[in-house]
Image (cartoon, rainbow over all chains, first blue to last red; front, side, top):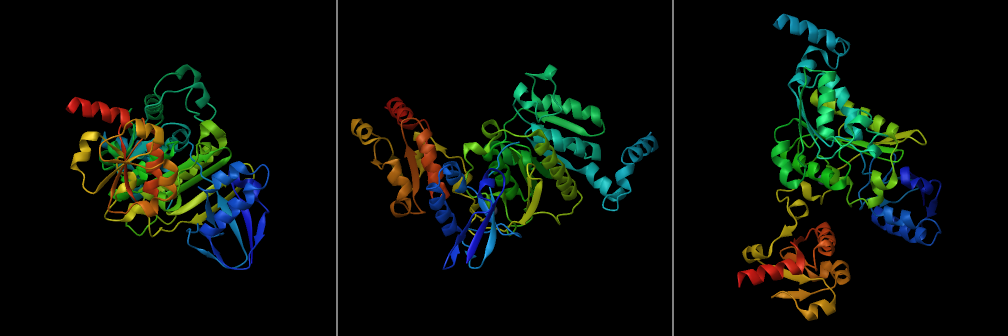
Length: 84
Length: 355
Ligand SMILES: [Zn+2]
């Protein structure tokens, strides 16, 4: 199963990044996995922190932390935005 | 005179009266509507002229900030001559000029959990034109409590987000269902910058959603609209209620009740655990009666093992900044946690005064 990423805004750098998994995992587990993977990549340290308050969405809806990712899919990464 | 006013009104709103979604009935709904706008910065400058132009009956502007030069790249209704003046006051005057038939009020009150409920109760809809997470949460809390719709909007850099939360019943999602964790400081305009054009597009969507809600149309509610003005992408996502979101229960406890308690209030609490999170050396030099010592690292990492939902946790450090951080984390886990107001030093003073 392949999960590909499409980041918006401050998470734009994640576009095109993808990961292969052999077993299904929840959004919560995927977030933790992604943070671990990015933390060893140079230049991604700020994104690792931001990721903890990002939401993940498929192309239709924002996913809850318990949603099971069990097929090839694109995940949109929606960063926190708090200005006006 | 009445006939004259009707003719003038018909001329002013002619272009929207012919819209089948508005018409005479819709215009009457707009004229009867009362809207609260929290924040008078860039978003307000974009959304309010459209609501005023459309003939919304009454609008209250809340903001205690003054106009500064660094605001002008996006807060496009203000001028250099108005630097130092109150945003709410200047905006009210400007909007009244635009359409004198709309009742525009302004106030310098800060909107928060304590002040918010009685204010929101008097309005049909709340516009979130604030620029910080705490205010957005306070709006969400008050609107969820009172079942009032609100239009969330946020802008940062080239990006914008907007959503209408209908909150007509407890099954509908709220802001906190989706924005689970507090955004970091980098998610604010003062840190990461903001493009005026991004504010404007979000403001236009916010105005459309607000007008739709006032007309009674919630077809676009509970969807998150996202814009990236750099790549010119836009997308929308359905939002769902999170089952464990604290905003929907009968027991809207912990998370957004006032987190500060004074030493004297502790006597009235049952099942209390008073926790000192200062360093071990500070603890050994002296601590409050009946307190226990737990380092902040252990407190956050082992909270589920250390505490139960029935306990009332009161946390103190030297002042209160570290305890606020600890309490935020504990409340995120659903625990009833409070900060001892003023920390160890203030409590010691209160104890000495009592003696
Ligand atoms: Zn909720």
